[in-house]
Image (cartoon, rainbow, N blue to C red; front, side, top):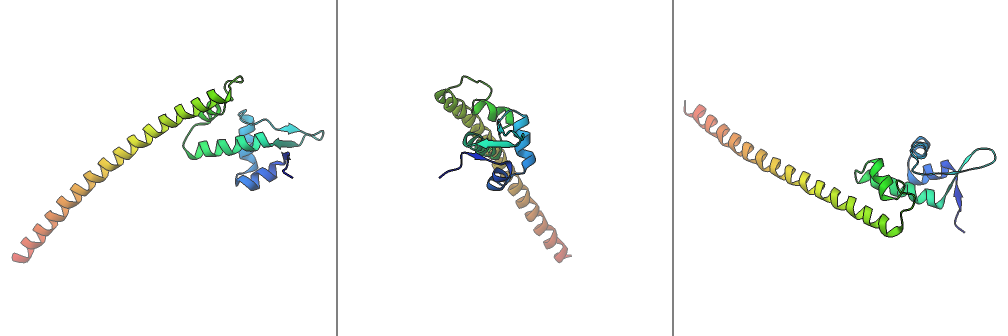
Length: 133
């Protein structure tokens, strides 16, 4: 039987993040755990799923504001279709950024290879001149 709620330590261990990070996401309104009568946090499966989405979004380089909009926190009435459209739009934007950065890196690599070739050629010329003197 699957758990219906989780302690902060459960999620921290399972997701390899600190309890402080989980509390930070709560402070930002990204997750909203239940509270026991003793005021302990209890996280639902929905919170667990949201944490996984937050971590994936962070891994992909999204800001917390972008993640909040993608998972529908900025718009309480967002439906799944709109949530998917938001995620696709952010994904397309991120892919364009990645492609742009990759092109910049490829251009830099080509420049470095050209400079290296010129320096290697010049070094050989200087060594040849030195040996003939």
